[in-house]
Each structure stands twice: as structure tokens, then as C-alpha cells.
Length: 370
Image (cartoon, rainbow, N blue to C red):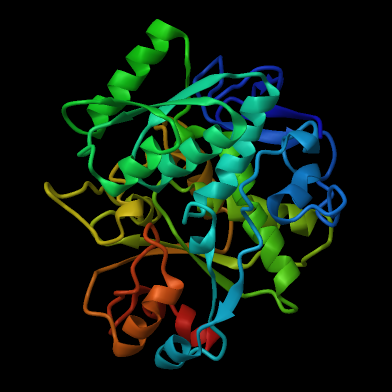
């Protein structure tokens, strides 16, 4: 499908002939705008499964180029036990952890690596570590693209070992994540290799919107509420975009109320929506390691943050009937312990929510659903 990239800050339009991560005028984050409403009901190429069947709704020029490991089509399962404890008649979970590399990021990487392939890009740089690095390295390997990763973690870390097994070129950096970012930027400037930074990536977010498409297919009755773990905000923004497209083509009538879930130790979006200053405490940590993004989102009008929350998710959130809550990490109930292995993928918000009072309960969400 033909598309352009539009700056979310200054609205400048950019063509899709090269791989762009930011506006060439103001440095703002980009959004994809198609020349026609996405054909959400289209089944894609004959026999296509997973994300590939949504190729006509994605920034991909030829479905034959789609880079896939079998991502998508994750099941939605009922959680009767936990739902009963929370007083909910209908509680469901979408199991993204059964994706090929164990993370929802496979959706975004399937799309952004396909775009890399279509543009003839032979190598790309990003931080090597965690689920994001493992997923990106795996899809690059599938596409025949060289992945150059920068890591500060112990080389024996299981995720780095998994990344190394994809054939990636890994550079060890002394220091922390900031040191890795600086080293990757310098390497990119000196070598001319594309520096990815997936959290800024419009193509990645397009992959995430397919979660909304699948929910609309899998459920006869749309959920009133969807709780989304939020770190950089790409998953939240992707689901929002997906439902907006479904509404536009008449596939669903209304936007479910989206609830951003953050850990109390890392709650930049919650604080921004509350209109208060926030910063992470020194040494702060969380069992939900995938959402420990401590960069507070400035207002969209003055932000130069690399997080999608600041320029895109935050203003949209303020314009919709959605909210955010931060939960502390208390001891899980017996039912949560029993179902945790089935429900929670590593980067998601832990189920160790406060038993009383829960932030969503205080906001009236649980009573409203139940």
C-alpha cells in the first residue's frame, strides 16, 4: 500500500523511498499515513497466516517480501479464576508470549525488517539485549540482514547468548545503556550503518496494531476495557491505531477504553496524565523489567524524547476515554501464582497488583466491568 510519513510535531510530509526514523525538519517522531483506508477485512495472499495476511494494511509494497517467523494469531483465553477474585464476569488475556521469540515485539519487527529488506538495507544497528534485541536479531537473520548489536550486559546472559546464536555481530560496551546508545550512534556515524532505535520506529508500531485486528476477529463482543503494559508506549499506541482503523472502516463501533499499566517505580505516563512531576528513584527496579522506562514524557509540543509516549501516545490518550495506573508489587494471590506461567510473558506488567485497593478499582474500572 502506498504511504507517506508525517511528522507528529510539525506535520511535514516525507516520502517512503528511504528508511526514516525522524522528521528531517524538526526531529519529531513520524507516523504512517496511507493513501487509502486500510483493507482490514482483506485476508492477504492466498494461504497466508499470521501477520502476513494483514500485509495490505501495512507499509509493505509487496507481500511476497514479508519477513515472517510465524508471528501473530496468538490466542485469547478466559481467566476465570483471576476474574472471579477481581469480581469480573469476563476477564480475557491475549497470549503474546507464545510469539516466535517469546515477545509481542515480533509483530513490530516482522514489519520493520520487511521494510528494511524492501529498501535494500544490508545491515542495521541497535542495542543488543532483552526481548527487543533478541527479536530484532532473529528477524534480521531471517531476512539476511546483518545485525550489529551493542551490549553492556554480561556476555553469558541468556538473551545475549540467544542473540549471538543468530549470527549477530555484538560489541561489548563498558558502562550502562546510555553508554551503549552513545557507542551505537558513533559506530553508525563512522560506518554509515543504519541506527535503528526501535522505540522511535513508525514501522514497528504498525506491526503492533495487528493485535487490535486479531481481537476484532477472535471475539464476537468487543471488550469494554483493555489493559496494556507500558514502557516506551509502542504497544499502547499500536493498539490505539489498530482500533482507530477498525472504526474507520466500520468493523467495530467504538474504541475500547485503554488502560496503561505501569509499575509504581516507573510511572512516567501515569505522572504525565496526572499533571505532576516524576522521576525514578536511584536504584529503582521492578520485576516487570520490560516496562522500566524512567524517561518522563515532556509535553508533546516541546518534546525531543525518543519515546513514542511523549510525542504521540500522551496527546492521543488525553483525547480518548482512557487512563493509566501504577501498581506496587505485592505478593500475588494463590490463583495468580497458579495462572502466572500461562498468562504473563517476561516483559509484561507482573500480576503482583495490590490486593486492596487496586488503582483500576479506585478509578471505578473493576466495578464498571464486573
